[in-house]
Length: 365
Image (cartoon, rainbow, N blue to C red; front, side, top):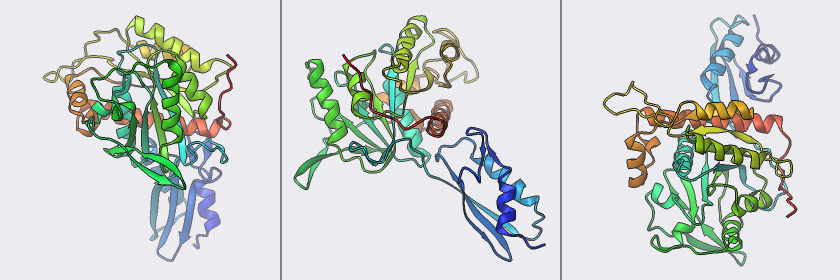
């Protein structure tokens, strides 16, 4: 039997992407199809290198091609990726950044910066290009989280304009007011000054090509949040909470802010941090010291995705203090953050395929 390209594509048109609800051929995910006397070769271009369905799709493609009766032919499937974006091409700010992700929390102390730093490193470990803007101007944490408190960004001049070169560590590009102000000095600014600093990080930093740029926002709902959505088209937001009732009450306000009609930034999901305590010597035991499933219940009530739960263990605190995100190490917590990264990347891909282009928010105050 002679197998033609049309035969292979017809077979692969039966392989569905469960997230996007369409087959791989119509989605344009099958590329570089070649057939020789000894081999059938093609690429499957996923929407993110962090795709949690990679092996399932590979196996489904293999089974589909095998139905053609290709005995004696080697089937070579190259699983690759190209991160999608919902941005328009003509936007002047951050034109080479595909996805802009706000990481928010209703209140302080829920571990938002810890989640941001580990999530960024986890995405970078999958092969994505990632950056972080530390938008918590009055309480910057990223220099400590990444162990680069004493580093200072350099500046280069291109066509008469000065560009800030972000610090890069663990595969993540970083910019923070903490790099520009001594750690012991309090930043005593009015809201417009903090907003101006954020705008400068966005417009005057040479980010290069990025798949994901995360914004570590301050707690609550403030000038910084409004400045962000009015300056750039945010792809979506995630909200970090603990299971505790008081944290959930504030997290609801964070979700509500992004969902207001005049803002309308998609909420990609909820992250439940400090979900349970697991002693190192009893890794199979879980103690729900702040309550149980609060983040899951909030996600269900808000009709948004639950992205994952992160336990409260000593190694997270130690790794943050040492400037080496815990996701770089093996173990339960690293696995939790890698799962979180996969789930976030999945939600971003679904958002880009099912929603319209992102827009800068116009808020009349």
